[in-house]
Image (cartoon, rainbow, N blue to C red; front, side, top):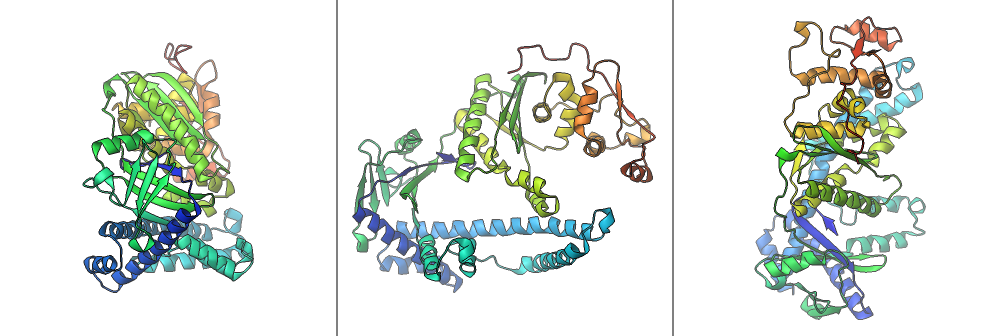
Length: 511
């Protein structure tokens, strides 16, 4: 079962078909793909959607079948336009990063002479793309851009001959069809109806393919109750038939019934920090103190998308049940990794691997969907400096990991609790204290990134009197920062306060 943040839920199953029914579905998918491309061409020529619909109906399609084609084309165009904007957004920071590194000598971290020439060509292509991107119309490639370019490198992509590639190309362009539903139609869809009691699926094919076709033995192993609720409430159900290696699958999508809200922010908040290594959750009481914690590791590298979704779904279900059980809302951060992904090639293989395996959107959608069904409120927060706040204030005090400390900072922010800098880290002079407190957290965060948060935690957790730890204070001049970067000691050092006696969580309170 798959869920989306817009309230839609999708359940799927594999169909057990006889040869004749499988052939009919293949023929309908072939026609659906041709009609989809033909509708795209007609609209590009200036034909109105209404006139195109009349033409397709005269050729034997029903009005609802045509609406399924139109809805598919509309979704493809919207998805392509969105991905095009994300492509622009990711290429701009990459071009800036390359130009910044080109301005440095090789001895100061710049490119070698051989690599510099190639990087100049790359940045030239990026700048040309960004210059003309606003005036270009994103193109649709029915069948996929990757497979289309595979014809130019057959052996590298596993094709022995061009005819073998052509067969794969035709299959990818005619491997599915969509039947849109409506709440005004019987069983939520005029073209496809499911009977959960008799385990049958009745599909209305075009008249040239035989009309109605009953498929027996259709069982939904997961999410059957979602379809039962949709049939009882007369909600629209849309069906997408997809041909894969093991045969035909059907995906039924309908609006999920959101549960009645059962959480109250005044009781506390369950903060969740999403990271490449997993999810960390911390529960707080009504005044912001942590009372329970747990880290859920997620090893997503080398996992397929289906395996990653399954692992994330299991963790999201456990966290959603936890929030429902304690009656507290869930707090997660709003992140945008498009700019960072644009810098992948310029930050090294380790950084690229980390972000490439970080399925942030999948994690966030899984949590939001689970909480919507369980009646748990989800609070989306700006994640500014939550990691720095957690490391400096909470990690050593409560014995939390870095991710758990960030989750605690998120939970406290959801409770509208303010986080001031601890004693010894705030600017000393009055003129340095102006501005928002986030400016000072930003200053401290730069120091931690430069000097290492693990060293900070090690010094912070030592017993005895307050330990000194070097950090860049507000008084440090740019010249001092440059001297410090070259290995010279700073003139100012920031003291680390000791944990407040009695502030640690009692043993057994944390999970």
